[in-house]
Length: 350
Image 1 (cartoon, rainbow, N blue to C red):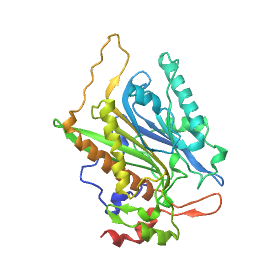
Image 2: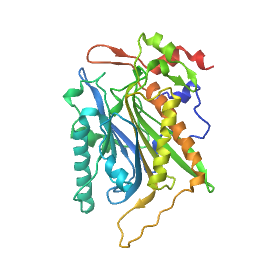
Image 3: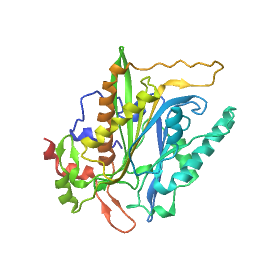
């Protein structure tokens, strides 16, 4: 069944055109997969972004990271910042499973390189996280290598959003958070390019929530009969086929913070906002020469990418919430869905 997303409530975010799926997978070659663990003790899992269809260890992509507020446990960003390249899929999970997921990504990449006849002596797995302990018995560390492999095998262009994979146990603005995505297209030299975003949302004070500039947080606080403070985390992964250097890409992903702010967050002390990005345009493969030629956007044309990053992040956050259903925690408390609120209060946006 097709999931109902924020645009299906008549809410149009931003001004730029969307891609055909309005997901990160509108960037050619990008795929997303999940493995979800849901039982009486757990609401958790893993989500994997496959950046390309080839062997990314051999054919690396330009990449960047940015830490807006560093209350997080992300792995692999040090090498990204140093070398400006990505050499593995990007995995998202819960805080206490970063190590296990990193190990599984390394094992999968090793196996893939053995199959392709590529020598691998070291690899830099990239893993992001959010703390889902409000809805998950996180100390069980339920995510195993088989879940990572399941997510990698299931990766596709049309993936589910909401309370799945790494978003199974997250909360956002006091309601159910999850995995959300959106995309925007831009035209450069007569050609259409895509900026896609995927979020794992787990942050925000309820009273601060805004939807398309309309402050709804206090009304939601009364509806859920409670209020969350601004703590938790959000992971943002941006993909694009626009040719960018690592430095330019870092400038673009920093603007994902605009989308977070537009949803109402002031980015509190206890919240980790960590952004990752990659461009599929310049493939850095093996070669015999000493020099490498890269194509990149002119710096004075980059504003349209800044807008795309902000708009796609804002919409991805809202999609992560409206597609996530109500969930009950192991201790018995229930977290409600933004989708249910919008169904009951559609008049706010008319």
